[in-house]
Image (tube, rainbow, N blue to C red):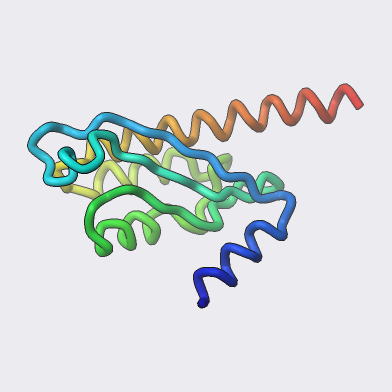
Length: 124
């Protein structure tokens, strides 16, 4: 039940936003037949940019947990180069390029959302 409690806490915080990004998996990867695309989902505290939760459609639990350990707790505003570098250099699986691309798209989505929210706040 810890997972449900964690999700409820995230939902209860109006500053937390969920963003996602996707990339095509290589044909040779085992999960390609199941998914074709690899997804990255980040829950980000919009106040400080900190990644409070992360998930991916990588096939194995270990790969998912490893990805989470690489990115959770980092800031998508202050630690952007470190996030990218950690994933690029520490995840050496066959899905590495797709994971990096999906993560980049996810981060781009967050920054677009932040710009939109900033525009809304300044017009009030």
